[in-house]
Amino acid sequence: MQYMPGAAGIALVLALIGAGCASKTRLLPAPTARTLADKKEVAVAQAAGVQVDADGKAWSGEPANLDAAIAPIKVEITNNSGRPLRIRYKDFTLTSGLRFTAAALQPRKISGNVPGESVAVTRPYYGWYGYGLTPYYGPWYPGFGPWYGPYAWDFPYYTTYYTQTPVALPTEDMVRKAIPEGVLNSGGRVEGFLYFPQVPEGAGQATLSADLVDARTGHQFGRIDIPFVVKR
Image (tube, rainbow, N blue to C red; front, top):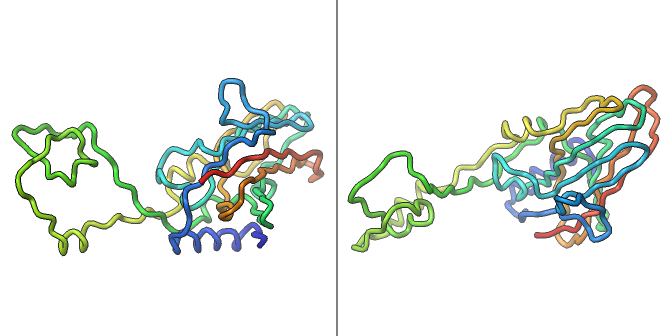
């Protein structure tokens, strides 16, 4: 199956999120990729005076489990080509050997949701004295001592009200951390996230590609390919 950019790619994201079938995915540099000396998780490639650093496991923010729905890749682009470099989402693609090709998604056009995640409270806001926590809240409030007496699980109440609230996409973090479309002048640098549909189950490898296009002429003067290993 081949996924194309635009509405089709966004529809894929919606289908995966809605069905709840997507598993968390990490993109790690393939053995053939060149990496930074001090950051082995960051793959690096150069062509025609342009360098792209790519990190497939750098996401941190809201939602924390974003990689259960889409593939966020942090890139840093340095342009020393002597040309103004066009930064357009369709110029960045993620491909695998399973007939999968997807262009970067427009951050503001991503929609759907992911399940909310429970957060452990290691430092409660308010203090306490003589308070024993019911045992099944222990994972979320590790700073409290437990109550060892009887405290029955109220199944009808908890199954009705204690559900995880879905997180709607895109979040403010996703938009704020994304690279917006524009032009990177020669001598310039830009960094941020690109978002892609997830690579299908069964794909062991994927390649991030960047078409290098002169913003003035529209002429492609190079291409960068960065190989990744897909981990789930």
